Image 1: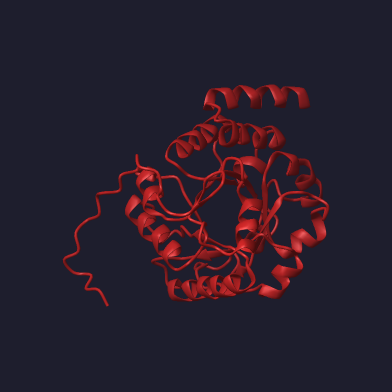
Image 2: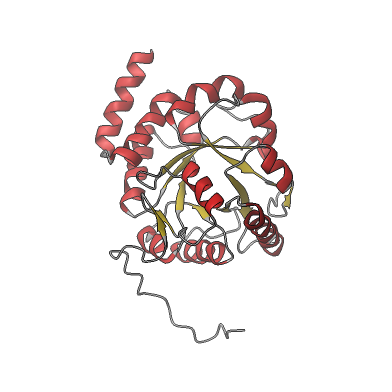
Length: 296
């Protein structure tokens, strides 16, 4: 194997030059060499006209239980489906709280582990088999990946298993960069984690906003979707989305910044304006205020 000693610090990211690998029409990054069925599922995640996505993450209950904003999934999700492209949740939530006739893409959480009562959340397992992902007509399988944690080897094994099975049956794998309390949240860390996940074969990577995000995106040969992270004031969250899109991410996966918003439906639509209509943060903020006012 390569000797890790004496390696030079990477610096030639050249984010101003577009990705030169295979793309689908609309600009979905790095999927030109995938099988037809997997390409089709990728267009259920990323709009084929612009290669971008707005995902709604509501899978928090798999380790947090009931959390603020997600007390009644059966009431919340139908309200937000028209404002997003993809729903990201657990199989239990999909089967009990999401109307099967919706037209959203489906990103299925397949990894699971300890609850928030445990100090170490990094020892996850693959809890959902490929057969159930197929039964649910999932467009992607989401796996948490803990680079630099005690459970790193286990989560890489989980990711690789899902990638292998996904390639067999034509379902993309979404590798979710974990940011546990023991892990650094630096550009160096995210450059390492996103690149590892992509090179292991994941077709989509979910990561977080940080400095040098444009370099992180440039170095990753598959689409990066920005995680919303902790709850921010709506205006600040919209500004973060705008900055991330300017850095080249392929969309966002918003959770608390949508479902804990003062007006979740308005927030989802404001985020979509930035991602799909190239709106400024100020334009999206004004739209949020107008829609919120109409709903009250």
